Image (tube, rainbow, N blue to C red; front, side, top):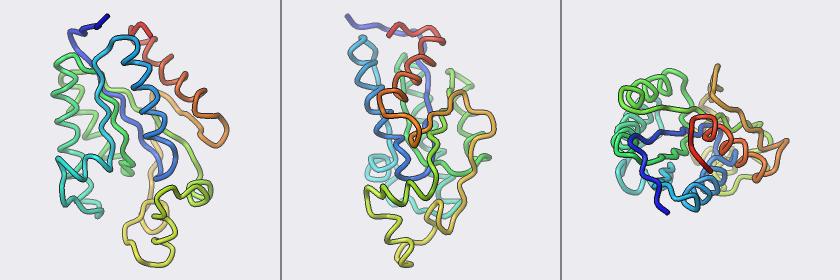
Length: 182
């Protein structure tokens, strides 16, 4: 059964690189699709290879990149799609901009994927922290560029304290509280 929403929504996962954003978002997307919803998962790696080709990592380059993503998410959501966005999005002011763009036409939920930089360095799934610590990468969030945790997210999931399945269930519960039947 396909569930057609009149208006979708955007769930924005933010956190350090390697915190588990895309893993949680991917599993939540699977569950939502199983429940019949139209879902799009947009993550940083995919976006930088497609709609934001050539985007850099300075503060301004990140702002422009995430501005594009916010508009894509808004367009999808206003057409009934549940949009799960997985981006480091390290700056509070940029996340406020994203929220403002989306909320003109669709609900926006911010999920903070909490993980210490020490744990993210230990995980380092792409080897980015190791490269940044050797000086091979500049503007690495958590190393030589700040991450500003959300001050009032809709949900905090702690990937050091809870396993993936528990955190996915927390996200789904948030969506249930907003009227989705999962």
